[in-house]
Image (tube, rainbow, N blue to C red):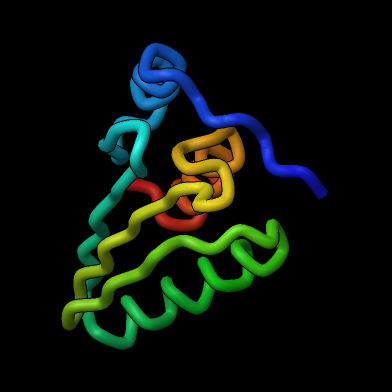
Length: 97
């Protein structure tokens, strides 16, 4: 399945205005999530893994105790695509606010 094209800076800026928990640039979008405990953080990662596998699109995940740092980019496109935005929305649905 071909990956969608890379977003322009303007397209990404408009998209990020609708994803207030995310920041970034055309090189990748990022979100940090602080959970109540380490186990909660691991459970959140497990839930994100299910979504990522379903989409065949995987975020870079860094777990530090109860804080999860995410970076999402379509490496094969060399930047952020609509697929990254879809994944960000799915993650936000799992872990709002």
